[in-house]
Length: 156
Length: 326
Image (cartoon, rainbow over all chains, first blue to last red; front, side):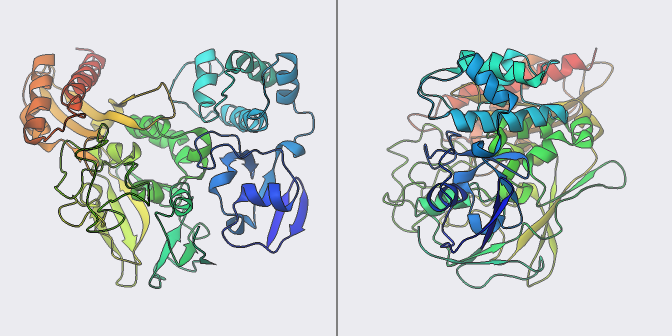
């Protein structure tokens, strides 16, 4: 099968059971996306599929041969990455690649005018960022510094 | 995970070989396959079928293609304007990542999150007919108080489906026996003695679209959801409502549906019937919700829903009545 990841096309011979996450980590050596819960509940495996954030653990690689996958390795110094460094938006770092990919996807959603359940006038208020990022858990509880990191990146 | 073959569907009426299932967003199916609860022999990927459009229906309704992603539907300007409760219900469900994959058809067909169903090693009449149901004496805190049976008290987990039930949406299906339509309120079966069958769909029938008919009162509508944490959790109770009130304060039109109380999105017909023509007051709203619950059979740990749902319903209808600007 064929997978297009971070702009490069790869030919792979994979079992149909292989998730996109396992294809990235075990077969392409891209270990940035993390396996946390492996059930779509923690967000550590978040990558961008045709620019939209998704849980790569719940996606079969074989079904994504026409898609463009972007992982944390493909972001290359994105403002969200710099924001996380400047604001110390992490502690152990395990959830961080998923947080950053999710934030990049989320800022694209805000730009397109997508609403959230919070419904604030400001789509980048604290409450909005927290709601929009609720699919990414951080067991260190580093959330307070992620919020300004993400908001600041939106302005860059 | 059990091994399976994979192919892409060539048409909505293709049908399915025995043991095969359709794959769309996969956010529930792939999870259940990992858990060993779903064990298909083959996956037929329907995401390349041309079912991804939202189109206007004559008179102000919307036709939502079955492959429209939950996030795209929630953000659609027509849906937000004409059916706020639908957009709100979608945004109240899952996470940004899951909504980007989950489809309209797949959302309707997602399975219960009852912990016994989700565990292939436990008895469960839904995943293994005849094996029994440990939920009545076990963990049933978020299981059904309405519509359950001796065999099963699972709840349907969708938020979107609750809004669609209130809106009298129509489900279009296609399959080897030809196309047909099903009211969304009749799509999900009550379990009876066949809890393994969630819906009235036959093997090989594919949901192709969902029609939401025009409903003028739906511009004053809302979805309210109670859950154990502020975001990204299934409902412990939810209410979808639309309300229209006359100049002299009487209910002229009301739509009401509940989530997380029954094996299907629960349209509260009895409450609606009781409210029509009555004063739009908290006391009437409460009495109507209580009337809907007259047939409820709460268990040891889910009786809280008997108070939660009437309170949520009353508060939401009061809010909608106030917004009418009387």
